[in-house]
Length: 306
Length: 235
Image (cartoon, rainbow over the protein chains, first blue to last red):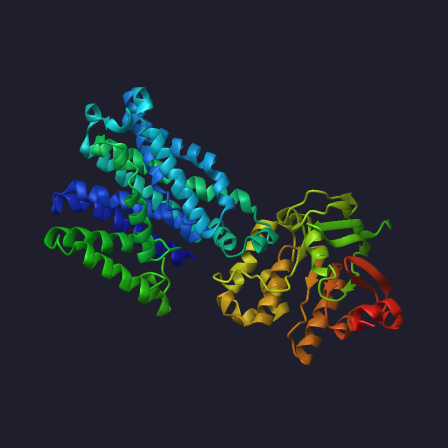
């Protein structure tokens, strides 16, 4: 167990060091910020899908809610950015509570249900009738609090917290209980686990992660529209990165994000005309030959994957 | 109700749509006692276990455990109160190791029980403790279900077809284990198709048909009972 925690800690330190040091090597902070956004979201998907088996296609709903709640706390209530980000996280948890009946669904039905819910939130936020409150489709401007360095550091802290949470889940009884529920809710109940309660905790936790990440994103990007923060591609990226790397591990989403998002940027810049083709083929090949993600290469050889 | 009864069912009815799976079942069970539940497929044996375990809520009737009435219990409550079960089709947590299956039950049920290593030894899975549960064969998975149930420290154990698919020497070993558990004070309700197996364990058997009890006593007497014969032989 100790050794397993140590491996988790190594992944943690490497990730945090990379994001702290990379901007001084290659001065494209926005790229690394975006990478951190996807890493944290991928870990949120990992908690929900990897550990409890719910595939949240509408995960972006929590991200967008967090972004808007943070932005509106800043513009309307004049709250400083960092507490506003926390409010963003809480707003997403509230949305999670409202949407918790979705947890009664399973498999594809949950995926579709969560997708529909995220679209619902998007249409509410972007509705011109709410222009006084959300500015409707015309977006948000946070230039008055724009501090790229501070928001970058905040994002590093968020990634650190999220990684810490996933390392805890990976190595704790709580994580085992979540996996037990995913495998068989009846057996899990019979083993004494409060199935509904534990499942809801994972749901709220991943909602909160997406909410604070959305909040930090809003602060960093400072000008955005509903279409920016409720873009379904955000869900898809987070899900694909997680699956590509391998779920139920700390390392999987990290590998998935670095490899795929790295490729995405390299190919997207060098070969934009073939970009979607190459990317699509790459994902297809990996899904066909490594359905359990990149970490399964290590697992097959009998190595422990943190 | 006898004062030493750990489990009492009073006229339990469970209905699925128009189908009465349990049609007024009453039974009592004391600590350390083994009660066999037999009957043809669809007679309500597993439904009976599911109601006691808290998977289904009875539509009518009363259920008492250790003297107190339980009405709206869930599986989780059952596990915490000291009721546990195995499953006809084993349901271990397949991607977890054998030991982790027990660690969870130990941690969440919070009831006194023998050390996990002893339980693994008891069901003969010590050497497989670090294997994924999904890699075990079906009878090993059933034994793992049993060990996981025991890791919750039950006073009442509902065993659903533990013997199916075992060879004769394995059967003897499993029968010994069930005897041992009963001697340790656990009340056992045993649903089984293998009558010889039940006969080696208890003289107290309830025969069910179409959600009702049609006979209670030992199996030899049951064999002479015309109604039991009619149900089993279609005569």
